[in-house]
Amino acid sequence: MALFDGICAVSGCRFSLDYELELGFYIGRSNELGTPVPVDMAQGQVFGYCLLNDWSARDIQAWEYQPLGPFLAKNFLTSISPWVVTSEALAPFRVLRGTECDILPDGQLDLSPSILRELDWVQASVHGGQRMPRAAMTRRVEEALRHPAVRCLSHPLGRLIGRRPENALDLERVFEVAREHDVALEVNGLAARLDLSGEHVRDALRAGLRIVCSTDAHSVRGLGNMTLAVHTARRGGATAADVVNTMPWHRE
Image (cartoon, rainbow, N blue to C red):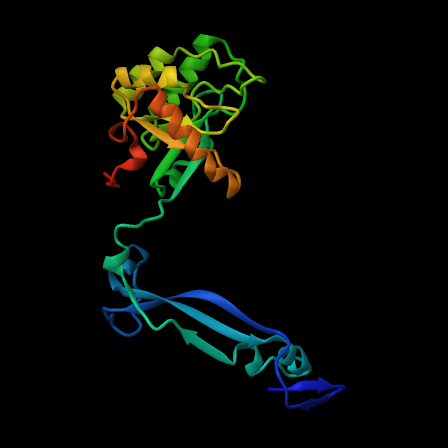
């Protein structure tokens, strides 16, 4: 340890100790030296995971940086957690790769097919041109629902309570196309949306559709919107069996 008085180092405690929290992997299956492991096979090589910390003494690092550094102060210690979490233990938990895609005026999505193919979950939404005539808006949404990547239609009617009325959309026709292509409809829990409404949730269930309860969160605080989404779904008679995000994940 060292303190600094001008250019002289003296023994003392650290004032600027820093660490980086990282994820460590334990490899349980070997590969031939020099042979790369394809990305889609990497998961099969991993036995388990741990937390890993790189420790840095920032004040020593600043002192030794010129003219030749940095040296050991940049990473004078690496520590790992005393336990290993196996891949099997984490198997029930998975973060899906997903996005909310804009539905363009012609019904196409605003992401390329190559990107959409890499995603586990795609929600399609109308975010502009809400004042289209009923027939045109319905064709626009129908076209998006037929896209093989789309799993859910977000805030289907696009209303903002007290600010913007519902889109002129033939919801009955949308229900038919959504059922045909196994697309769920969102119950958006943002207080200004609540879209689908409880009444429309009931209609969707009668049409044989499933729903997704979502928060429309743009911050950690917004995750609390899930309560409103669930209450709205219940108001329409939905149970857990009707809600996609209460179900186990199975990718076709």
